[in-house]
Length: 458
Image (cartoon, rainbow, N blue to C red; front, side, top):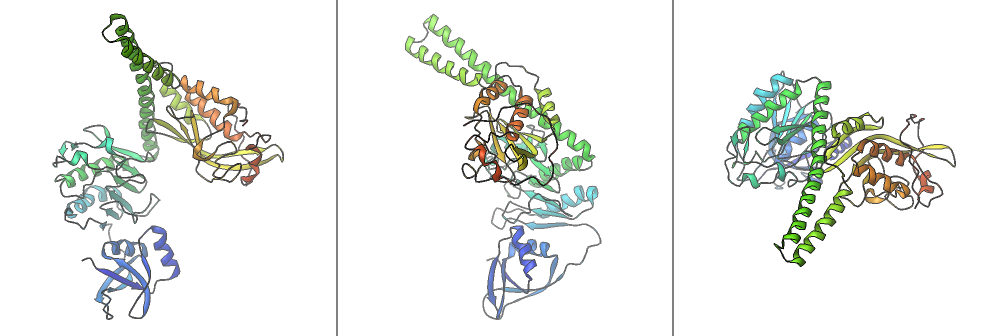
């Protein structure tokens, strides 16, 4: 049975610090007549790390509570950076963490000279991807999403090394967030880890002992990570942009390929009708179904080859655009703060930063998600005066324009129109009249000229 520690005498600021990190605590516990917190053994290292303290000694409590009472002191600064295991599996499937620690010491330490913290699995206690004086390695984890999201990236080998266990290819993997630099597995070209600032997320469960070569593959991932760490930040940003650009082009080509396959299917069914290889009824039903598919796909694309790379570059040139991400077959554009002027008061209101999603299969060609705030206007959960909950916009007369731009793959123009849509408001409309529910701008917004779009009318 794992030990449980009782720590007392913490200040309000220390307790607030621990609560802010997501460490699971049981507060208001009393032992030996004192109030404190209970910490299970596997979380003790993480608690000490955040408190910048270390254990000098420990004893069993005198009140038969079963708690261990540690004697703490301020952590002594080490003369050199070191590697520390913070979380590790405790069940029977755990593997020895020492080879992982040695790999980090031998591969990463010479490149960064910082303390390295290793987490053997994702838990609520894992630090978020924020700047840190330390470097964090999260095994079987991601900065977002669940452990089933990365199923398309699973593989039987990585860096030429076998996963050994025949079921390894079926295990749950985490997926990249798209916010960092992907570390790709050369065996299949798909991400096996992601570097986000001071955090490295590794998607497979290498802390499980059934992956016999897990520590060796872990070392290979660290070696690939070092190549990114030693790259100049400007060059690293350029490399990430190139990778996103390639994914952007590939995603659009997938849609175009589906168009071509559906056209071929229609031709086959027409030939079947002529040759009589199938019954007239079956072939006719198949033909109608294929034509329906074609009409659906034609809303997404009207040609197979477009200047997709140039469209990607043009999107990044739009002043309000911060970055572009491609995930699950859709294009996500992240913006800087968007402002909108109320024509009644002539005052500017701050809407916030947005995630604009260009969808090839959704009900709407474009969706808008306010990353800063949601406001109760015409309805609750409004992202903008004309954007309802779930990101659904009221595009009004502009709807057909958005469909046409998506159909022609003129995506940079579509994004410009989308941003201008957010910046425009029709106060004669029932939804638009609530623009004054967004906070007033604290400063004069930059004058940026985008594509002219008429505000939506409900």
